[in-house]
Structures are given as structure tokens and as C-alpha cells.
Image (cartoon, rainbow, N blue to C red; front, side, top):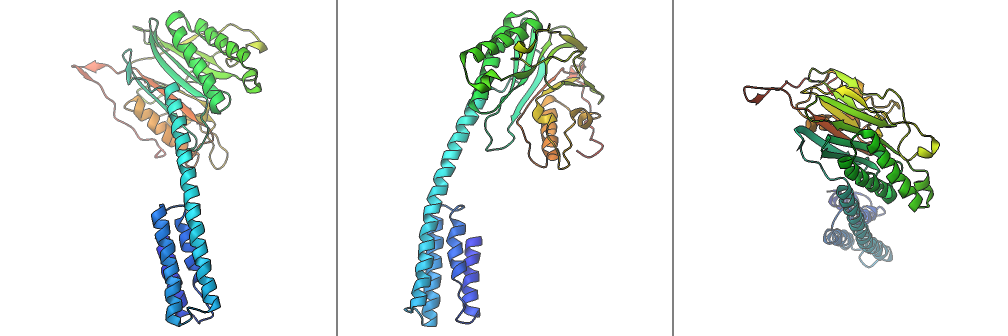
Length: 365
């Protein structure tokens, strides 16, 4: 409504003030305001109304053919013409940005397809949250695959952004999908990913690839056993949320360097095993969650924010987590987030799943 309001205000200003005052600034501003927000027809209509208002006021005052009146009308006409040009430029840029965003989103979805809601008897939910609608494609990744050794998971974060990061993500995920079916343990799976990144680094000679690395956590949930096995390569520790609201941080006994940094040292990968009982949920995430900061520079603390809360399923867990992170960061985030939740269904009684009521966070989050 602002362009129309400006025209009305300009008309009243011209009528209610002495002849030495003019409302032409309001008439000039109206089409300029309309240009970036309205369609071409609406911008043209706004410019026409502004010009008609100027001409009508001078006709009422009997000053139509005065030099000052003609100059004022020419100014409004010129500004209205510029508004049409601005409208075209803005619309064309908007279409180009929308096209680039759609291509980036398509590439992201092709590389990171959404997993099925149920795999190997487990409830699955995954989400990729961009830090900014106009941000470059990030290097966060996740994968879920049912294998002869159980359901295997990977969550990681490739150094960098843009198409180079997406290429590295494709390399890691391609190697994971092949090796997860073949390698009998997570140690050998991690080495396959390490070799795949090394081959990619040798194939390309740019600095980002040479200095690139990928933090990653690999998980395996074997069939018939209520356990989860983890191998962590420099990634944020996963969380295990129990049905009573308690929470465990699954930290590795020994820290390890990320994938792609094998030139700095060689050490044996070690898989650790934790209980994964019925009703519990395993949560894996990238550093976009842990590095989100509030206005005071305080980092988001997933264990502290999630402890004591109960969620009916993995999808609700991810929705609450993402919303809480964005609220903590003041509505935005500095980095992309990839989050993956796997829940082992609870016990069934009389053919129905036992459910637990949802409790609210003590701080109302």
C-alpha cells in the first residue's frame, strides 16, 4: 500500500500547503517504491497515477504551462521511466537467483536423497538445513544403508563450500555406499573412505582439495543385538536419548584425525560399542549445530538442551532440535546443519506399541 499512500500524501501536501511547496518528492518516490516489489504492470500504473496527480494539481492551480510546473512533471515522468527499468533489472536478477537456487537444491537432493522412514526395523529421520537461503551449497553429508552387517550410518562434514565441497561429498558417499556392503567392520570401512579421499586429492591439484579433510562418524546397528557401534573421525559426538529423558554422550575413548589427513600420521581405527535399547534414539549431527552461537557468543550445547526431554519419534526430535538451534542463534545459523536420528521402536504390548507422553523442556523450549 505504500506507493498509493505516497500519492495520496503528496496530493494532500500540495493542496494544504502554500504554492511554494510541492508534493513532487512523494510522487517521484511512489514508482521507485513499487519497482522492486510490484510486477511491471503495477509499476507502470503507479507511475501513470503519479504523473496524472502532478498534472491534475497544476491544472487546478492554473499553472500547467509554467516552466517550473513542466520541469516538475518531466522529473516525475523520468523517475517513473527509471522505475520501469529498475523493475525489469530486479525481476531478471530474481529469476536468475531463483534458477541458481533451484539448481543448487536439485544437486543437493541428488547427492543427499532423503532416506526411507523405516530401514531394518528402525525409524529413520534425516534433514539438511541450509544456514541461509542464499548461501552456497555446503559440505555436510549423511547416509543410511541396510547391509548384510546391519544398518550402517554415516554423518560427516567436508571442509569448504560450493561445488568443490559437493564433489567431495559425492566421493565420500559413493565410497560409503559401496564399502558398507562389502567391508565386515567399521575399521575397514573407514579405511576405504580414507583411500577414496586420497585418490580424489591426487586427481585434483587445487589447494582446497590438497588441504581438504572430512570429519565423519560411522555407525553400525547389527540385527538381533540392542547395541550400536561407532567409529569417530574428528566429528561431534553422537547422543543417545533414552525413553526416560536421560541422555548419553557417545564420546570416543581416543580422539582421531578426520578423514583425508592420513599424511599427518597413521593410527589404528577403533570401534566402540554402546547399548542401544528399545525406545532409545541415536542422534548424529554436524558442527552447524554445535557452533551455533547466540547474541552473547555462547555456543549451542546439544546435551544440555536435550537432556530431560522426550520425543515421540525421530522426526519430532529433529524438528525440535532445528527449531531450538535457530532460536538460540537468533533466527539464523552461521553454518549448514545435517542431522540424522535413528530410533529403535519401543516394546509392544497386546499388539500395540507402548508410547511415552511428551514432556516439555523446563525452560519452555
